Length: 485
Image (cartoon, rainbow, N blue to C red; front, side, top):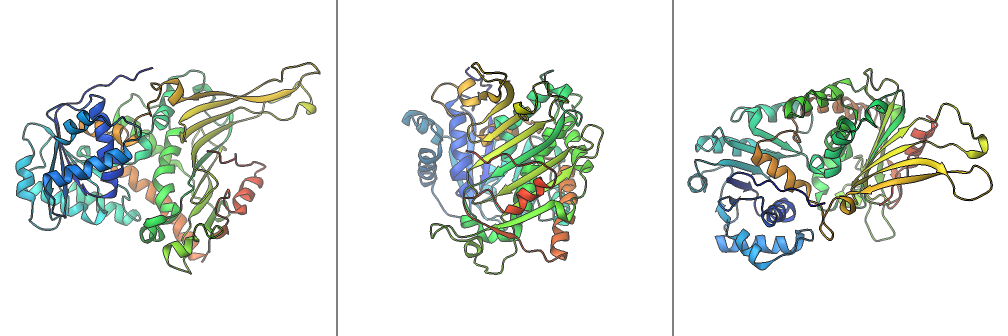
């Protein structure tokens, strides 16, 4: 099935931090793929902005190298690449000074949508917003895109929201979480609200529990300084896993409208129970046979108490989910790279096949990465003579095979999200009150383990995480599903 490409209106996109790692790995290659798909009109312009002095030709060379390395399988036709590079401009700019701002204001067109991507540290968000406004670029058609982290706690998130709100309306602020741009994440709403098969079963009467896992094989790498101040709770649970939890647990919105969807997500966050201390497991990865350093070596702090792994149990206290636990876990240096949501349905109330048939239950697995897709585990009779032997088999729909053109990778999350910014569609972006509600739930958890002086449990690199996470489930007579690539 070939996806339908809907071109967007002409626009100007300014990438602050245009020579940074995110621009090189994701933004520029993603825009090139949208160019090749015919979604970007010929009039559109892309302007890189950074402190470093570069000529326009030097910036185009930088972009060409990035696209050749990170375009994710997009055939790099030299003609298409040349046409894309012809869109690019570059301005050397001082985020906290005056250099380059007049030049930038002269390059954006007055009659177009203009988007400003803040691919920089949060400390510069306020300076950029203020200068965009000061130089007359904060028009009604202007949008700003800000990357996480959206604060370090509730107080800093409120301060950041207030800073941005001083120069832009909430409807102009796009807080980007790339997880929400993944095809499978968007399909959560389609699966739930577009299929009568699932929605009647999507409640505590039929669902035993839900597991949300985001596992990584990499360590902290070059992010050690940032990560040791954040940890898995701030870096992953407060945003990525929280968004997945909201989409899996939310009530049906009245319509597929940005604020209607985000209203329902906000209700889920506000309905989350506080997490009890014995329902949290924190871990730190150890060195791996000389191949990889330990977490503490990677961050350069032999006494660090920051977690690289966390597992926890929570509940959504409302009518739909009363009594149904939701388990979250995420960690680095685990056995496989895998992001999956497992909806574990209850056993049949009575088995007519006897104890020898064993226990069987339906599982809906929603794979976010890699190999995005959906698997429904169903119970059938094992073929062959010899009585009624039951076996669980998957009904598998891998999106790349079922929906994508053969040989072509599905669009990257950033491609979809940037195009949504240009369209003015905020459905897949977080609202300010949503961010603050997530921090209001997260802060007491972090404060609790700090006050108790807890130290993360060590776990082997390449494993499933600390053994205490298994005990967390075993106390409830449950078990984590295996982490598989």
